[in-house]
Image (cartoon, rainbow, N blue to C red):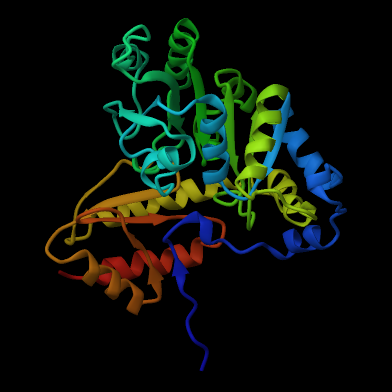
Length: 344
C-alpha cells in the first residue's frame, strides 16, 4: 500500500528540483569559481546584475549570506541599521548583524513589514552626536515574510531612496521573494535595482532552485563582497552545478509564480470559513498566515500532519502555510478538504 505523499506547506524553500532543472545541472559547464573560472556562475552573476541594472553580482549559498555580506560591506562596527522588527536580517539570521558586523539595530514601526520615508527620516540619529550610533543602512524586505507576504509600494521605496541619498545612507533590498512581488504589481527588476545600493535575490524559494542567492551592486561593492564571502567561508569551487539551477529557474519558473498566488488566495478563502481560524492576514502573494482559536497550535499542526499536510507555527497562536511549485491544484484541493473537515 502506497504511503500518501505529504503536502509540505511549511515554506517555499522545501521545493525539489524538477527533472528538467536536474538535467540543466547535470550538463552545466563548471570551473573553479574561487579562481573566477566557473562559466556558469559568471553567467548567472552577470545576468542577475544586468536584470537589476547593477554592474556586478556575487553568487552565494543563501539569502542570509548575501544579506550579511551586504551589511558588512556597508557598515563599520558601531554603526546602526534601520529595519522593521520582523525583518529577516534581524530575526532569522542568527544574530549575524551583531556577530559578523558589530552593528546595532533600530526598529521602524511598520504596516505588515512596510514603513515610509517619513518614518525613516524621523528615525535617523544625529551624525554629529557622539553618544549615538551612526545610522548607516536602511533595510527593506520584499515581500515581507512576517507581513504575510505583503508587497512594498515601489513609489514609497523611491521616496525612502531620496531620504537615504540626502543623508548619505546605504539602502539594501532583502529581495528574498522579489519575483513574487513583481508578479503582483508588474514592476521591473531594473526599477527595483535602481532604488538600492545592494540587492539580494533568492533563487531557492519561489523560483525552486535547491541552493543559492545572488547579491548585486556596483563593481566596488561586489569586489568587497567577494572578500567578505571568502572570509565567511563562502567561496565555492565547481559551483556551476548550482548556478545552472538558478539560470533554469529564471527561464522557466518566474511566470508560474502567479499560480502560487492564486492557490494561496484559494487557501485563504477556505481558512476564513474554518471555526478554528480567528483571522487571516490579507494574502497578496504565496504566504498565508492565520491566527488559531479554540485549540493549541501544536494540536492543529498534529491534526494536519495526520492528514499528510505540513505547516509551521509562526509565533504565538499563529500558523504559516506557503504555496510553491510542488503544490499543484490537486494537492491544494486535498488541503482545502482537510482544513474544512477539521473541528475545534
